Image 1 (cartoon, rainbow, N blue to C red):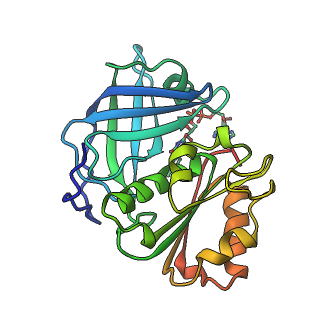
Image 2 (cartoon, helix red, strand yellow):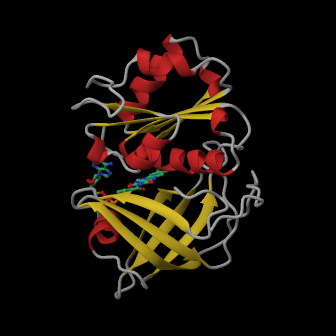
Length: 241
Ligand SMILES: Cc1cc2nc3c(=O)[nH]c(=O)nc-3n(C[C@H](O)[C@H](O)[C@H](O)COP(=O)(O)OP(=O)(O)OC[C@H]3O[C@@H](n4cnc5c(N)ncnc54)[C@H](O)[C@@H]3O)c2cc1C
């Protein structure tokens, strides 16, 4: 159940480490996991922000990594989506081992630059797990009936490799697949100017998230289409697309 009256704040304090209990684990493929967390002392997040997750071994060794929030600010749990990096310390544990009832340490929400205020008309372009923070934006826009203010373009090699593809496909968004035709008939191929051009007019902020290669390609396309660089916000992580 969602409470759409909860307003995200730009300066949500993130403080120290908090306990988070794993309430739901969904593994749509053998490389991906969606994790729903009940975070103690939770502060509201802005769509686009992230948490840091810390794992600590019995011998005291600890490792922490950033994971973007996929849930809307008003959702009752904090959702993250993790792609396994081969031999990755933290992602392998989260994708392969984590179970409902486990506890994690988390710190957040963090990040003010790559965050959507929920009202400024935006175009969000994500590749692979780069769609995760954009899904939070999409869910927020949907919850408050402002889908006209947020267009989401999700790219991946195949439909099955795109996190949240079914949800993205139901919205007003575009799915760009490099190795197969998209459900709405877009021919297979890497993201290109024709995918972006119809969605630029009237947008004031542009979010780009994905692997370094994807982020550079998408940003260059936007600049070539006339978007001023100061309106483009980029976050780089992930390997798909
Ligand atoms: C702001 C931010 C938000 C992020 N959000 C998400 C998110 O929503 N979902 C998500 O899955 N990840 C996200 N990440 C990436 C995440 O923080 C970790 O870097 C990732 O999970 C790998 O950590 P690891 O401990 O498993 O791998 P590590 O043990 O750190 O790395 C293992 C090996 O893999 C290499 N490697 C690391 N990352 C990659 C990669 N992407 N592709 C190929 N090789 C790699 C390393 O160089 C190393 O050799 C985000 C990162 C940032 C900075």
